[in-house]
Image (cartoon, rainbow, N blue to C red; front, side):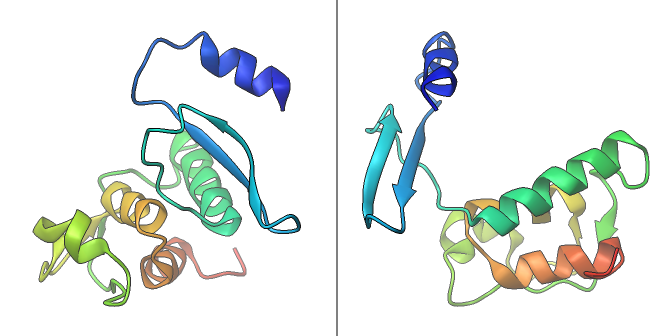
Length: 121
């Protein structure tokens, strides 16, 4: 972890931050740029975003692919952070992945997974 923080410190950006929270200790165990608001993303959504990124790199999908059958969770903050996405008939794969991670939106995650071939893929 220390090598990750050392590398992060070499990046000159006020928009870079990381917070590591221990569910075992129930506290923040490490942070870099703690004044920056960092959206919460579950490990599963980060991994899903990583897999989709790899599929895009391989040409299986494109960030601009339109997802017409999608849902956003009304209980999450996507309406606040992405008001321009509300009521849309379709969203791009890239936009939906962004909402999924930034808003911790499980319905967006399910929509992305269904578009990419379901959980079995």
